[in-house]
Structure formats: structure tokens, C-alpha cells
Image 1 (cartoon, rainbow, N blue to C red):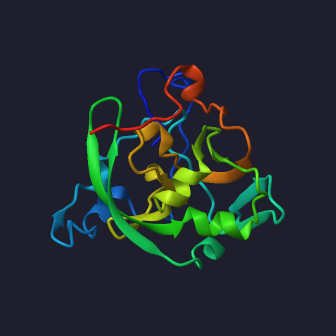
Image 2 (cartoon, rainbow, N blue to C red):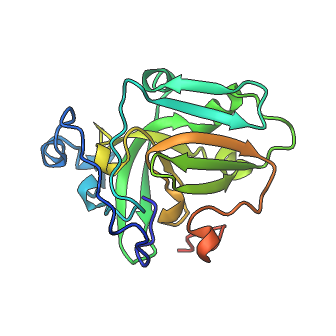
Length: 212
């Protein structure tokens, strides 16, 4: 979701048009699931857009997810190839530093599976993510492995709409929303645990742990 909303450095830029090929968010909301295994879900419409440049219109046909950096097998995967990985679902609450939250059913692939196929080198400890709008953030590799972190392509059983993160969003469970990067285009494996992304370089904690 990018977050935090207190600073809007790109507020005067024109916002991209959302592709007419996708059903509208209003239409998708009619078919999203409201409950999962007895747990009530919030609507994905409750996830507010606090991104640095507004919703991104990512073309599915030309999209490639790049996994690079300290790897022995660089990946460049079309959208449909990413969806061929085993799929998992879990209910996770997204917490925003501005005070709101949303409990959503997320479906996606395990980031660990994708990273394993790239054959990371032994000294990799950090995963750096880049979005279509240039936003960046990072997560420790051990955190990703220990928590079965998802790279999500569905919310409440509907495909992520463009204004909510299509094609992929990182479900950074137990982290503040600025770690939940949307419109993911590149994943870089690194050995630099001090790397600071967009909001981290502006003073937000790199750990971003939600303590509840």
C-alpha cells in the first residue's frame, strides 16, 4: 500500500488512467467474499491508496517479474508464469501508520518458492522490492521464510484490481503498511541488511514491526 500519507511529494503529477480491461472496483466488490472460515472480512475497498504516485496501470501482456541481484539463476517471469507456482491463502490484517486497518483474505504464492528458484547465494540476507511507480522497500530473508510471506495476486477471492496493486502485492504480515509494496516489478536479493527504501530513508523504522 506504500503508506504513510503524511508526505505527498508527487501530489501534483497526473495520475495514470486505470485500464478499462479490468472490471471496476465497485463491480468486483459485489463478488468478493465477506467471510472466510468463520472470520468476518473487511472489503478490499477499505484499503486506502497512500502510494507515492497513485494507482499504476501495469500491462499484463508485457509484464515481467524480475528476480535478480545475488542469485545464480536470474528470473524474468510473465504474469501467468508466476501464477503457476503453488497457491496459498491466509487471512492477514494490514495496519496503517495513519490509524486504520483492514482484515483481508489474501491469495498468492510463497515468496520463498520464487526466491529458491532464483538460487540465492549463501550470504544473501535481505530482499529488496521495487514497484512500478519507483517505490522501494525491503524485508529480511529470514522473516520471509519464517512467516510464509505471500506475493499476493488476489484479495477476498478477486484478482487484485489495478488501483489496489495489480499484478502483485507483498503481504508483509506483522509489518506496518509501508512494507506492503504494491505493483511489484522487481525483487533483488542482497547482503545489505541496512538498505533503506522510500519511507525508511525518510525516517521510518526499517523493522516496521506492528506490536499488538
